[in-house]
Image (tube, rainbow, N blue to C red; front, side, top):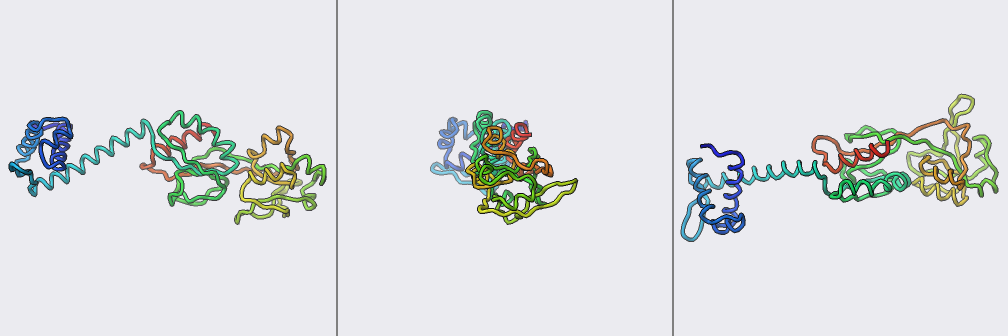
Length: 298
């Protein structure tokens, strides 16, 4: 009678253990079987295949050419079984190191507060989070998931939309008491404007006036590569800045920053996406984290 798939997998495991240990007794100790049970398993394989797989002497076992071929196939099949089971296990209980890249302010204020709930839900995932406004190369393996703002460039990455944000011009009450409050965009020429220093960033702020959109060039004493630094400078009374609303919403509500020129706000919005290497082989830890962000942030 033909052995079942499970029986043959067990036979392969026994045969591989004999080849690795060099004897029936060594294989038996490894697998919790008696030497005679191991010997009967090898006999059964040989009888079914009709070939000799091992040459037995009183002192050693040696594989025949057919035995070498069978051993190679058995190891490959057992490895495939392990991979298949691990894949299913990962879907049920995702595990491993998850490298996340997020912008400083958005990461600190929006992502980090969610991590406690995430690691309680998925205790076998180690979250390795890097807060930086520098764009990391996800396709090159610098992160598993990155959170990006603005339009996405063409790339092989998969993107899931998490939401969107607008920008707000703000200054501290102390600064406004010293320098005055701008009433029109052009008044900013007489103010210290704090801007981003990204290569892609231009020293202009967009406005809408009388139904027309236009850009105004601004100048100031400090530039920075992240919105959190610009917000801190504005809170310290250094100048006026224009940053994502999530960076300054709490400070505005608390009266530590004052929104400016809202009547001229063009209402421009930046989409927020989680980007990652997608496809059928996307690790379960990446899929569940992105699903979690969509659930909590969208």
